[in-house]
Length: 249
Image (cartoon, rainbow, N blue to C red; front, side, top):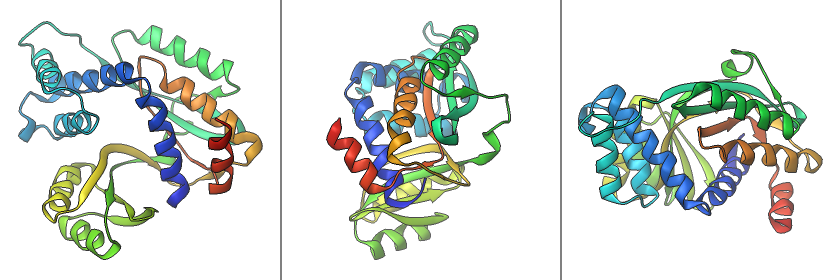
């Protein structure tokens, strides 16, 4: 995925998730709890937790819910020990999918992911079949003028800044630098619309109108699973194809 089309599709998928607010909140809370359990409850000393908390705040998760999730993860109140894993496969058209799960029942998660691939025209692959195509990065979407965003991001330690949409910019960082870069950007007076640790593809697969609906249907079905935290894909849907799909939705 690249440039404007990438962010158009990310926002399209995020919009579908936001329509299911309760499920989105549950996944964000699960992420916080897992991060606190694995790295401790001190946000300043646990960058994974800091990112999970900030993402929850970006999506308007109530403060009390966030604090309870941290307490569960820290063992202060009863909680669940979640397992993180990745499943790899292909959507129609040869699009690679890298599926991140967080679950308390790996057998259930594996069965659900496998069934969803099969029912939606995809193919679940072996471990390592597509993971090498993706690299973990920090990613921010920033609103503002190009020169202002470029200066603040690069001075804050970002690796790259590219156009995402009109007056919106994608800022890519090393995973460990995400929060520091975000702080530098916000202190410059700019607005960060979203930020997360993600997996960016090294190559992209062009998707035509005939395959785009099938690809997005599989991605949406996977994201709708309770154990799936995120689906990373290397598709590149042209703006005009995406606009056509959005009009038909």
